[in-house]
Length: 254
Image (cartoon, rainbow, N blue to C red; front, side, top):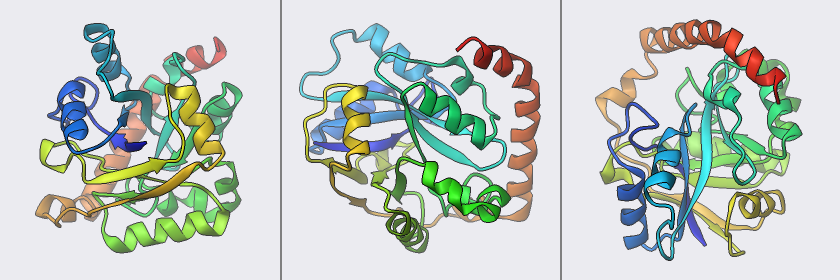
């Protein structure tokens, strides 16, 4: 099966212009068999699609994920067991150690998104990972290819996965229609639901991943500028503090 393992959709990510249905239909036309919806701290787009399309799309699987914003180590793709949505994963700002414990204790898996990408959101540029690289042993996979990143960033991600013997995934990270289908992950096995996807990644049943990096734009260059990095970190920390009481209540109820 060929999947896009990093997809942002309208109603879930405020900067995405594509509905889950439109995303899926374009992927299917391009020869893909499924997609992992990975909106920022949100299951809204996935839930909206399931509500309006209870029978799904014939010949195409839509899996449930999230791209979670930690407060101390950047963005992580999280995949939980079929049907399990933990409210805390929709409240950004968990510490990485807490995220790892929460995900694994509930049967899920996680891996860093674009680990050498934009400095404000990529794990390997945070002190947490620089000071304690053995935390990587707790990751279940590493995003080895991301369309939005440059070849050097993707190469470093692949090398990191090789060093720690972790499976690699590929995802388009698309927010616009023109970038849909520019990255893939191929699995040896047939996947029906999230439980199958988790099992396949744990068993490294990935036969290939890759794609085409998108062109460098002025906006992509600006994302690594000092003011952009500092601004996002400040924004993330502010929301993390704001959501802290709700997040603590959610975690205590798991």
